[in-house]
Length: 568
Ligand code: NOJ
Image 1: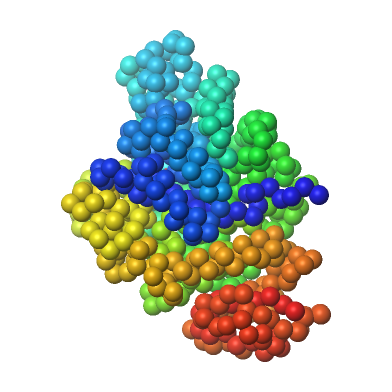
Image 2 (image 1 turned 90 degrees about the horizontal axis):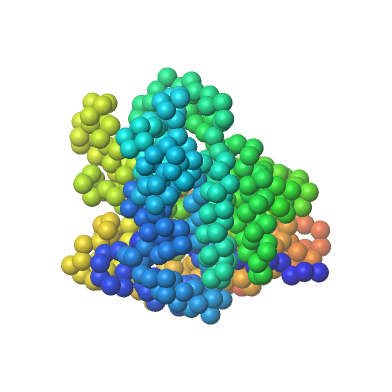
């Protein structure tokens, strides 16, 4: 039998390059900075890195507006710095996947600069052009989806900001140019790609208008004001209706197959993970994407045992129904999302809940993705001075609120601070010196550092504390790595009615592991009757219990305890 491909047993760790480690004191993270932290990453116990875009970019969307697909952003270093990073990562058995942004380029990319010059230049048809806006489509970041280019007297389409024009994927030259870029990095040895916003690549050819009685700013405001379940449902429906003609085209399947075929030409199980939760993009399970994220889990407002059970039941049933069963992929945070510590907290037990959720992520079936900083319990940092925001989607909304919607500036600033993704992209906190050790003292960092670096939320201090969040993650990662059942075992729900705790098994022919996560401040006494099993030997406990065997008929769980035990 073939051994499993590496990405099935790996734990991924997302690095946001701008915020990871600044080696040259310019307030911005860079490749030499990342390379210097590889020993840290190796000691953490992760197996693979996903880098958010590291390409040249005018940064209207923090690197997701790319102006050169086969280059390194000068502020991050040189191509040689990248090669050194890759080599050093591989030397430590860490795989590396890159971000691949197919839907759009920067409006400063040479392709677009050429395309917008005239209606008959060689790249005239590389983007999506129209004489007049053909419909009322919105961009999901900054209002109208059609922007006028005076040079050519036409409008171009953009799903994201107007600085991110959509490529015309109907044009075979576009495809060829992008596949060349894909091969460029694969040839250098990268292990795969995270595919940005794939759902948005093709639009409805009939250009059907949306029927929502609001524009983007109005809908944002409507969603924020929605408090009752009925209002929230309506807001959700509006979001769907506003954008449903602009994404999820069936044409994506042949495109993903083509891309998959390119990766399959290379040795070493190169892989693709889609920024989408639609399992259809895995094709027959072997001919499109290797993984898609379980975003429905991440998007839960609160993580409760009942909701996790429901989520797993639905996802695993769909994955297993593919002709070649699909592999799950879970995450609870990334650069677009409020941090785990903040968003699933209840204000009283945030630390306990963050630990439970880490245990959940690292014990559910599938490949887990961690986001840099979660391992030290970094939390959201609200930037209430709009002048300090770097996420232009938030600055646009602040402007709309104050200029169009009549919201007082202070309230608008608070709203912008809460909705911006800057709050979860602040620099990594390495130690307790000024700037959290991300940049030297006195350097102005690109986003402010969360001041809680000085209150123990930093790597250096936590390394020395056996009970820190960092050592908790390390122990969890180690437990997972030692356990065949946690890495690859079948999943079976136990006690499906339990409201306060989650109980499930992971089992392979050689090992059965019981996972118990108590999502409540109440102690629990739980009993199981399982054929052939009598005792549970703890492999991991958040409550610091030893490895003393417990009778399966009577297990005590402390408040918010996470317990992982091997059954005998
Ligand atoms: C998804 C990325 O995760 C997000 O950060 C970006 O703004 C959009 N795609 C557009 O590329």
